[in-house]
Structures are given as structure tokens and as C-alpha cells.
Length: 377
Image 1 (cartoon, rainbow, N blue to C red):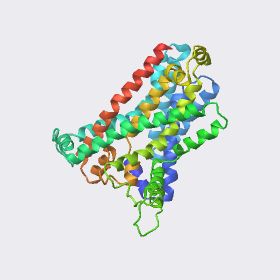
Image 2 (image 1 turned 135 degrees about the horizontal axis):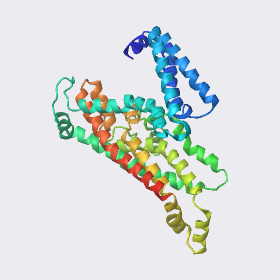
Image 3 (image 1 turned 30 degrees about the vertical axis):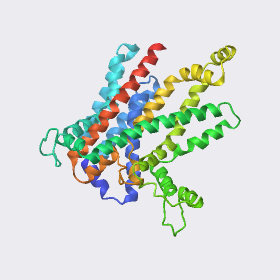
Image 4 (image 1 turned 180 degrees about the horizontal axis):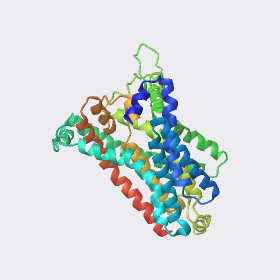
């Protein structure tokens, strides 16, 4: 792998891009093949498996230039496919077949997620060079520095505000436009920010917040309005602690579309019979919404809230693009990158581990809710 990256670094930048994309496509294709295509019965899929047994050794031959390695890979791959097919006939070895075909995906997951997590956890208890264990020194530094405490509080503020406001705004919008004329166009308007990267959204809003000296024309939308009304230009991204809220608005703007689409689909799944029965009981619109619609979309609300909460915990692009963490706006992910850039690997890993521990309860809660829903069904 190191040799591949060393060879890639020698190429011109424009040549590196298609190679990286091709490598990514190969990895994704391998995962899809082993999870989706390889287990399927039938002649077509048998031919595909045989083709893989030929093409993969040829690829190894081209990369490694070694016939023994290519022949060995062909023998191992063909043997594995034969053994899995043989054991999986007529459902007799289903578990064996399942493990066999999921093994490549699990292996890639281990390389890309589990091993880095373990390495980061170890680094969190080491010094800046990773040569000596220092115990909890990095965590003591994190929780005793006022600036770091402010960073953790900022992250908590993000997690409190973004999911709540995005979900409420998305739900309200979904309810108001439900079954209205031009519903799909209204949805497109709110969902459009989801198509923009967080960096792009941050640049857009940085222009909106831009402040210029009083003797110059304001190019920022907000300051143009403020000055037009007779006020003084305000540097929105420098006024602490309100600047954190101004950055939060950017993520709310992006995530409201996601919440609206998911909740709109859930609302349409609420049984009409229940709504009609509520109307016959004489309930008004608000009572029908709180007593019928909200309980009917509870699972979707949990998914939206937990998903946006995780996104808020991991927020990095917005802070990095707009303020780079200055003026008391930094968050854990941004500080993790800042410490790593300053060659403080132990402190960076400590921030990463704290972020991971904050994310785990949300994931566990989401998984338990999904399990409960399956049990109900």
C-alpha cells in the first residue's frame, strides 16, 4: 500500500484523480460483489464468479509481476468459491456461506474503521511523538484548559440546537405543504441545500455575514440590511458567543431539507383511517397532529434526531471554512485537526476519543429503537 501511494505521489495531480477514483470504484465493486452478487444462484452469477477468478489473478499479475502470486490467488479464490457454493447448496450451509461472502466486507471494515479506532485509542495515552505512554495526561490537559472546556461546550451547543431546530422546522414545513398544490416544488426549495457541500454552504453564508468598514459599501446581505436601516455594520463571525449560533444556522439550513423529506414520507404513511376517526371524534387540527400524526411518525422522528445529532457532533467543515476556530468558535473535530497539524498526536487522539465516546450513546440508542420497532412488527 505504501508503494502504491509513493508511486501515486510521483504522478501529475490530474493523473492522480482518475486513479484514486478507479481504486475507490474497485473497492466498492469488490464489496458489492461479495455481498450482493457472489451469493446469488444461477448460471449468470456462476459465470461472473468464474470471471472474477480469472480477472483478479490477471490484475495481481499486472501489479506484482509475479506468476506464483497470481496462480496462488487464482487457486485460493477458486477454492473458496467452490467450497462456499458446495457448503451452501440447498441451504445446508447457509451460515457458512454468509460468513464466507461477508468476510471481505468485514475485512475492509476492520482495516478502515476498527484498526484505526484501536490505534487512535492507544495514541490518546501517548506523548506527542507516540513514543511513550503518559497515562491520562492528554485528557487532563483537555479538561483543565479553559479554551478546551469552551470547545466541548460549543460542541454540546451544536448538538442541542441543530437537531432540535432542524427537526422542528422540517416537520412544520412537511405538515404545511402536505398534499398542497406544488408540493414537490416546495420540497425542492428546502431540500436544495442538501445538494451543496458543507464547504460550499459555509462559503455562501460567509458572504452573507461579511462586514466591511463603515466608509465602504456592504457586500454582505445581513450588513447591507442593517446599514440600510441606519445601523452600524456588525462582524457576525467575531462577536462571541453569538458567532457560534451564526455558524449553527448554516448546518440548520442544510439539514432542514433532510428532516423535511424523511418526515414528509412518514406523514404520508400515517393511516387515513386513524385521521378520519380523529376527525369524527371532534378533534381540531392541533389535537389531530399531536395525538395521531406525531405518534405515527415517532420512529422517523428518532431517526432524524439521532442522525442530525451525529452530524452535529462531527461538524468540522463549517467551522474550518468560516472562522478556522477563532473567536471562541472551535469544536472538537476542528481542534482535533488543529492539534494534529501542530504535531500533537496524543492530544489530537484524545479529542478524537472524546468525540467517539460522545457519539456512541446516540448510535446505541438508535440501534435499540430499531430493534424495538422490529419486535413490534
